[in-house]
Length: 389
Image (tube, rainbow, N blue to C red; front, side):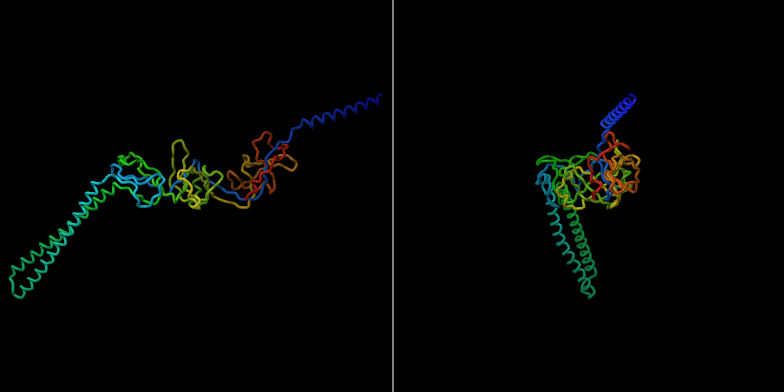
């Protein structure tokens, strides 16, 4: 009886242990699925990016208007038209000025003809005075006659000098008339494309009053040379130098970047109300031919490469926690926290100097529930991002 009771108790204990073991097995926490990336060698760059969107700019852009007011008489251009340097863009009604210029030219021609006439007479009078002096020396004429001849020569020479001065005066009047006429004509200062026209034939245009800007009649863009201008935070701008390599990205060309280099760093800081203090930085396209299809005014971003380390161990920056800590997925399926020593870093990759080895798997999905040191985990997938060169 006692022995049977002991056997029953043993069987009951075994059954209870099996039930408890089964319950523990089926109710245990499932391993959390994590995304991991292998630690592999590659390139890491330290970069600086703009704080607000920049824009594509033309190296030369002229917003031109006539220097004088008047009615538009000629407007031989259209939006989008390409023009050459010196081509007529606009001409105001200027018949009064062109007529005045014609009169000035006629007066100049008359003055030049008068110079020929009086200066020849002056030459003749001088020659006569010399002849009279020779005759006086030979005793053929009196001193009085010589004096009259020399006076006549001096008078004729003075008349000649006056006539030459009148030519210069007439020439100045022509130049002044030409300048007045030029104030009513606008010509292309360089080869380019007409971006905007603010005016129509017959409309009256006036120059901008002092301190009150008005719309230019013609906006001319030289699109043969373009660059990107963007604001960089004043703290980051201190690291930049002209010539540093850069990458340009545009909203209009997603997934594509253009190589460039820093061509100018503004020598002053812009302090715009309610915005961070920034420095305007200009980046020029490395291959101008690639940028020919870009439109002036496109929004653009720049990323300037400050420093580069090649063939160094790196991890995705998304795997780095505050305090330079990472979570490592061990072969045993546990998450283990590791302190690492980092080098160069950017938004994509971080250089690892120590704390991890090549092939280690670090967790990049740190924001998932249950992802913490000591937790059981299973790799959902392995990111190849850290292995790209």
